[in-house]
Amino acid sequence: MIIGNYPNLRLRRNRKNDWSRRLIQENTLSASDFILPIFLIDGKNTKQSITTMPDVYRYTIDKLGMIIDKAIKNEIPMVALFPYTKKKFKNNVGSEALNENNLVCKAIQYIKKRYKNEIGIMCDVALDPYTSHGHDGLLKSGYVLNDETIKILIKQSLLQAEMGCDVLAPSDMMDGRIGKIRKALDKEGHNMVQILSYAVKYASSFYGPFRDAVGSKGLLKGDKKNYQMDFRNSNEALREVVMDIKEGADMVMVKPGMPYLDIIRLIKDKFKIPVFGYQVSGEYSLLENAIKNKLINRDAIIESLISFKRAGANAIVSYYADRITNLLK
Image 1 (cartoon, rainbow, N blue to C red):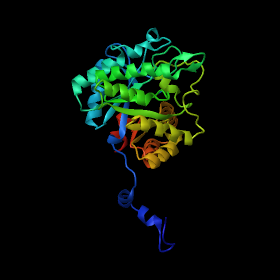
Image 2 (cartoon, one colour):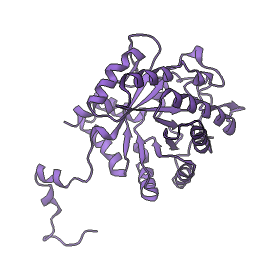
Image 3 (tube, rainbow, N blue to C red):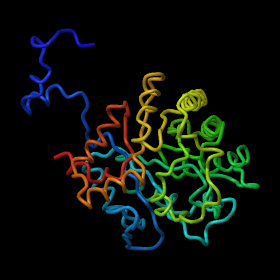
Image 4 (tube, rainbow, N blue to C red):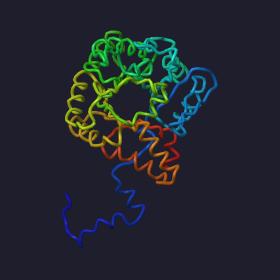
């Protein structure tokens, strides 16, 4: 509440000089606020561009060193691994997710062997990079089966934990999977592996470039509306979050990010739990294309990222993470 009246109170006084504006700013950004997504591809000595995501690439595992070195130097706390899975490894049940020699498993081992605990590793728990139909779980008559999918997700989680993953991030939106995964982890001695639940993942139109990046573009049969959330709903988001907290989630994610800043704020105010926002591929590509076509300038990037912090996000998954140090200068 503002107490006082014009002309005694002039809010513009504090905005007159740069030094004053910096002293009273309410939200700031640093590299420690970011999680860097990395797309993995099979092969050797390859850095492959992604046409739908300017300046974002897929990397072979032997190229990860230069990415991780830079991330550590810039004080990025964690990377998130996403595989580009070749069609020959995809099937109806996503069995490649349980292959101990899949791209994610090999990348975890590479990073842990070389860097120990210098940087955190976040792994996606879902089947969509591995299924021939593009869905996050087992599909039957157009419907993704809940309990049957969870059984596979538990195995995927245990495998990634055994390989050395620090933070498991179930993004599948199956009911009850957090509790089942937590119980299985604890039983197998992985009680210190963290769970970042994609508790609030909307059925969104902003995911297109990501599906291109992981090789599921054009494969999706139908849509994901019978398990991902309706973008019209906010109370439902709170129900999803409270369910996951009770089941053992250490942190929660809201995805997409910018269209759902109100949801981040609701969760933060209600539960006081660490909340992360994902500035998804569609958000990133819209910004990049607008900048390229000179519709907006690059200052819009920081403006967009600050909006997450203003909404209450503890951290941001963003494709700008590898450039954040330069962007903040």
